[in-house]
Image 1 (tube, helix red, strand yellow):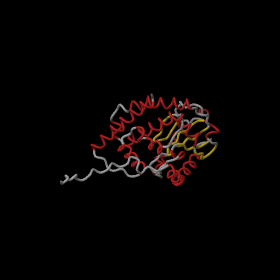
Image 2 (cartoon, one colour):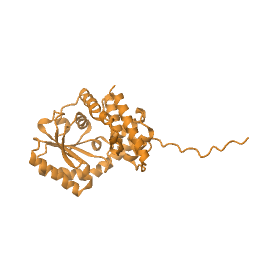
Image 3 (tube, helix red, strand yellow):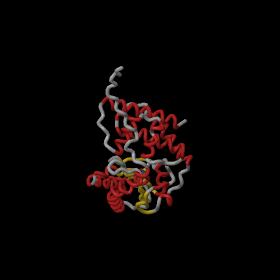
Image 4 (cartoon, helix red, strand yellow):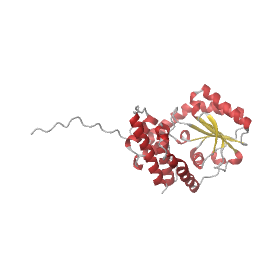
Length: 278
């Protein structure tokens, strides 16, 4: 008996976490990445001290806690000043950032919030910030405060634990629930934003990080959050897309695939938020 030709077998789908570094690989990689960021941080700190009286200068986010990728990750800083900057100092600080960006393209990702010393205990008040290439006002949230207390880098002045009050698990959980419910969940009802890479990345990753924090009362790196995505029900090709963009080179997308990816990211994030808030 002659068996029918089965034809060419379909190509195996790529493992969703292929290319994601292990915890050991990340730990080995982090000092190298911090070294790449060091000259810019030193230059910024020197210029900042020439413009404003600095009580302390701290780094949080991926550079401090791990999984920083130079040229891809943001540099998240907090500068503690004696008082809130007035209009003249706001202009001078904006000029400082703009001049640094003009000289060093990497400075576009250097974001700094200027926290007055008399508002150290208030997580709700907005403070002058230069981020995404422009001045704005935003708070230093309980998540940022917990990051600083758990492992913030001290570039100048007092350490975070010497100035910031503790952030309780209850306070952290309340903030995360409110952020998921009032900010992220409404965005999942709008298809438009999910056509863009930044939303495809940040929606699933932010929700995964919040889920871990609500369940385990600890903050995790983006690498660990990405590693949790399959167990949270994220589609494998969506996870592979996120991994490739952060750690490698993602393939070009057709219009059809971009639409499909947008719906995958939107619907997964929506469902994951619903489960996190149960």
